[in-house]
Image 1 (cartoon, rainbow, N blue to C red):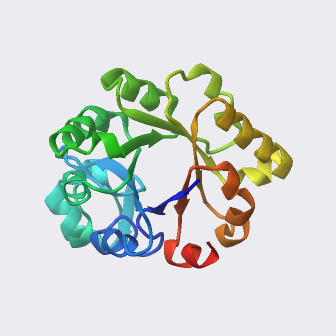
Image 2: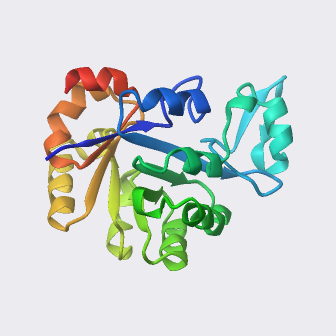
Length: 228
């Protein structure tokens, strides 16, 4: 079975979730994972955190227009709208990580407009957002991200998921053997398994776990390809 590799925020680091990161990652990965947030004027952009530090102040995206975001953010001019990502990535696997429930309706509309519903998974760590996604778009591929031990308890309550996104870091709070058991259980339930990383050494752990996953969301696909 061939494992699909997605670039985590393109490439994690200083230029993550930007146009250069998305362009570069497709040299090494099959597709792109990116975060979705809403600006104060209702535009969907690729950005992980609620805000950013600049000029000695912390700025929240929900308090800025798209024009203000691009003026104030250190990477402002390099941050694309979600629509532009969809437009330029119609032929590659995409994973849109939904950070805010207000973005659900618009992101589905954009995906339909640009014809990328079939190659996009909409994932989230929020049970409420996952439910809203499945209600808004019953035929969409919706994934649920595990971000801690408590996340696992939500799995039985979420019906109709396409994928479960499991962090390598789960080794730290459920143990390696339990992680293997979890991955095997998810596969038996015919759920697609996405493996992602927060603070672990993916070059060490991915080779140990890759036989039990379908997709790897890699922090650095260029280095990971060498391991493969």
